[in-house]
Length: 216
Image 1: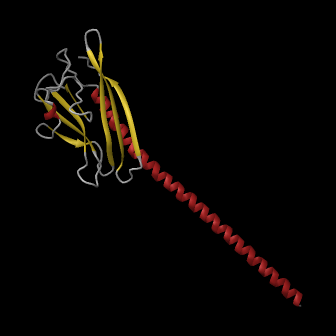
Image 2: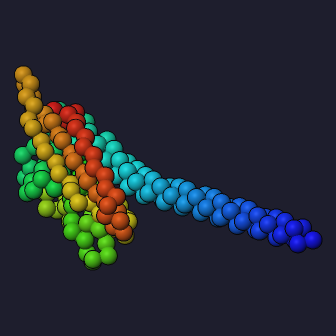
Image 3: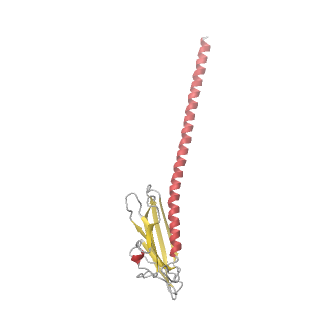
């Protein structure tokens, strides 16, 4: 009788140990699955951040590239148009973080010319990122660089990015002259770098190069 009780005790004890081991394995498996899930979620969030920044900067740079190709276009006169006071169709002064140009959009009238200036400006508050602004104005004659780069009559300047999301840390433009037999042009290099305002570790930078289409 005592032997049977002892055997039953051993069986119960063995079953209890097996249950504890099974429970431990189950808890470890659940923990592993949870860790994998959380890691996957974190990677997905990071990818989303990178895509947000990359797509925004890439699309704006492409937009700039396409519009800069119009710099100097006249369509009425054979000469290339310049902002008043500028030395070339693609104007990069007074600093390398300002890009300006003009081109004709109508043969005549109060909106015959479109002047465009891209410029980087520091953030207005500590909760916002540095801005890349575009100033667009239409006028009967090409504007001066100063008039084209300020908000006011005929047009306004606005940020190309949401300042609560994206900060533009660098906007640099370089230009090299290209000369032909009877005309000259410019080889333009544009560099843009930025990061997320709420997560500065997420960064992106890109560079494009282009040859001015409308030779002077």
